[in-house]
Length: 315
Image (cartoon, rainbow, N blue to C red; front, top):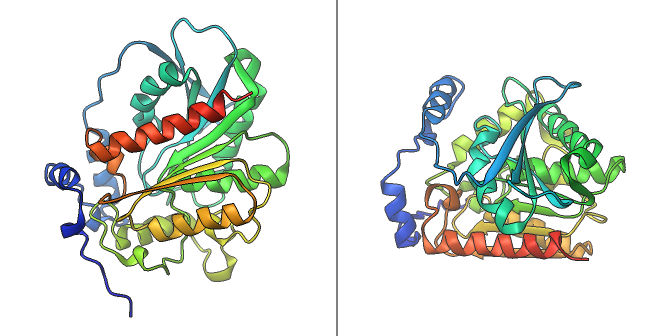
């Protein structure tokens, strides 16, 4: 029987201090508590923005419950690379507006367009609904690239947590449908494996504990289970990873997803996919979000931005 690791003594001291100042309450995540947790998250104060980035929201006509937020630094007129992003939230929480601060920083710094998609959440929408929402948004970006001032050959995808899991599934789906190119994929601590059979999946991550992870997956998969779960829903189940774009993966060493993410990066490398993996000591799930001013979060952001810049602006 796998021992449950007590991660508290191993936490980075700065991250431990940041955790003590927040009350995430995700141990109680369930169908009954979900509405209240969503309400509490929606009431969190917005992060102040610089005013240097314009954001315009577009609703997809063919999928009118899906919208995308297009971010671009004010005053830029040339054709730019783009990263298309999926927000986190365990497949049951979150909104694309939560990534406004990310693109407020990235668009000027990386000289790019940032686009975030508001996909439908589980359990109201189960697989393949949220993934098809993400695909439709990416299709819209490609179809409107000229209007948006985007270089269609330099569109990459990315996400954090559940959004990174959706991005990994989207990478597989886009590869197999072969309708549009993806230049790269950037995955921040991706949620990849519904089976929860790794050692780290049983750790009591202080941000995303096993019971919350189980609820997120069950909500997304609905009636699917066992071998009926397709690899587009849970990318760790994919047996063929060839032909995927260059990939960046980062994860905290104490994250419940650390084993599945490290294994996925290894398998990508074995499949011939250029892959960069970073594992941050003392860090649990979502460390850059709730502890953005810690040294480890700043390092993770530098690593991601350096990688993105090199893949957006390479000739």
